[in-house]
Length: 380
Image (cartoon, rainbow, N blue to C red; front, top):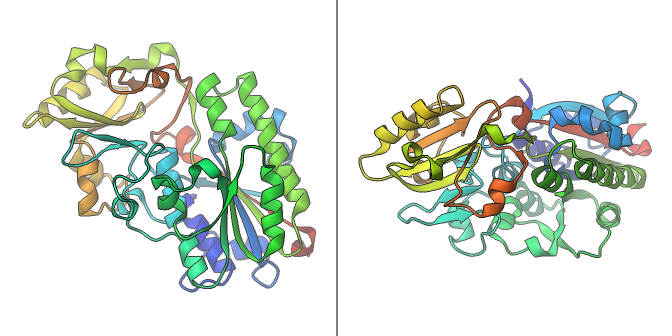
C-alpha cells in the first residue's frame, strides 16, 4: 500500500529530530539521515496527481527527468478522502485523517444551521480552533525548537483554512510581485528546519481549462521552472520534497448531472454541501431513507450512495470524532467513473463551468507523488 499524505510532515519532523515524530516513509534512508540533512523544503503543487505526471512531462523537463529515473527519487502516496484541497492541506499539516481534524470536504454544513461553509472563503466564523481542534506539525516543530516556516501568499494569512493547516508556523508572506522560488530558497538558506511552499497554478488551469489544455501545459512549465530553480539553489545539507493534494481529470458535459434540475434528486434535500464529485445531502426530517433510495436509483452505476453511518463505516474518512459526525451529510453520494453532480441553485455559477474536477476516491484523484531531491553535499 502507498504511504499517505498524512505521513509527510511527521517523517520530516523525525528527520529534523523532533520528539515523538515517526518516519513511516523512511525518509532517513532516502535522504541520508539527520547527519546529512538539517533543512527540508516541502513544496505542495496543487493538482499534481500521480497519474498526470506522464502527460505533463512534455512541458516539464525536471519532472520528465524524475520519471525517467535520471534525477530525484519518486514514490507514490495517497491523499486523504475527499480528494480536495482543504481536506488535504489540513491532513498534511496535522498528519491526521479528515475524520479526526474535521475538514471533511470543500464545503460543509455548519451543524444546527442551514449555512454551508466554504473552506476557501472561511475567515473567523466558526472559530478556527473549534472547527479544527488539532495541532499541526508546524506548531509541534516550533514548540520543539525546530524552525518551521511557511511561505504563503499574503492573502492567505489569517484565514480559517490557513490556521487549520499551518497553525503555529512562522509565516513569511508572499506578495504578488515576489519571486516564490527565490523566497523559498532564501528561507532554506537562512536557517535549519522546515520551509513550506505552495503553488496553485496547475490546479487553477485544470479547473478552468482542463487537464491537457495549452493553459495547463503552460502552468506545468511554470511549476517545473519553480522546482528546477529550487533544486539548483539547494544549500548544503538540504533536501526538497515535492508532493500534491490530489489529482483530477476532465468531466465531459454528458457526464454531468444537475440535482437542481432533477426533481427526483432534489426531493427531501434541505442543504447541499461537499462538491460535485462527493455530495453531502442534509435532508428534511424523516426523509433520509427516501433520499438515499432515490439517489441510488437515479445514479445507479454512477455513484455509491451511502447513509452517514454507512459512509463512516467504510473507513474512508478515518476514525470520525463524534463532534464531526453532523458535518457529514445524512446521505453521501461518492461519484464513480467520470460523473459529477452539479448543484446550480446552491453553488456559484462558475462551479458548473469548470472543466477539471476531483474529490472522489478514484486512483486518478487519490494518487499523488512524493519526489525527493538533495543537494550534492547532502547526497555524498
